[in-house]
Image (cartoon, rainbow, N blue to C red; front, side):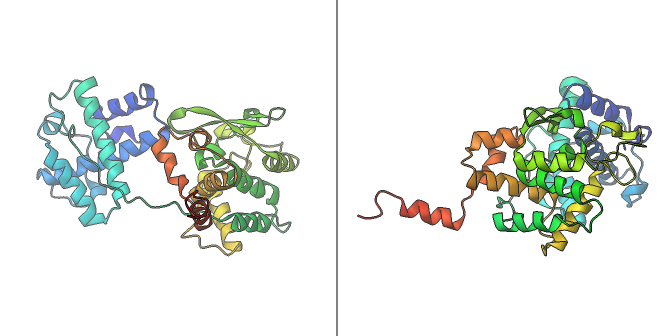
Length: 326
């Protein structure tokens, strides 16, 4: 939760703009707030405005626009270098903060008109390593579902349905947690979810998904459901009879992965999304544009990480080359 009282007015205005005009999700706005506050605290140290080195004790509410006018591109790079030397931040973390800073200064110059010069205009993002996504094989996925079908688990139907949706639909954690029962069209076998940037998209549910959802709905509590988090309509409920939380879903997935014998440091909820995408691409005769739509990616370049081929497919492609027998 963002404590707006701890922010300078210009930061709160930026967050409001991000929410109402840029239509950014609550999670993204929260990340913006965290990243910019950290940047402002660094600037206080960098410009010798405080002797406090503990970031948690450095206030930013009194940070003025006049100080922001002093910021140059090299100061921003100094911040990114500080993240590397002090926190050993990954390139992906620094890239996210660079993106937040870029959007922030663009707002201050073009929209709020508080600055005449944008110091982040030529800011480059750290180069990211292109790594293939980690995913479960088809056999591993079947094993995970088999282990999850365990009658000793009092939440078996719910947990099995969660894993089934992740592995078949490739949805994000926030999308699964946000599912409401009215979002499901049982006659059309479709599901409407709200993805990144509050963008709505349709997910098509196969037989396995429909069967798992219906089995869970037969045992889903329908009395004494709490009114918080719009829980009465929530598909997945916690044992506290309210909408299931992100952390609870992560715990469920970690538990089932561990029971199936998989390394929970290597695999996670997001890796199940990778698994679904990979299986659809490898076995489902799914082209890259369709996969982009299924996953809700804004850019095709994001989806292209799933176009990696298995060794078997690569060998088969080579053998099928019309020049292979010459």
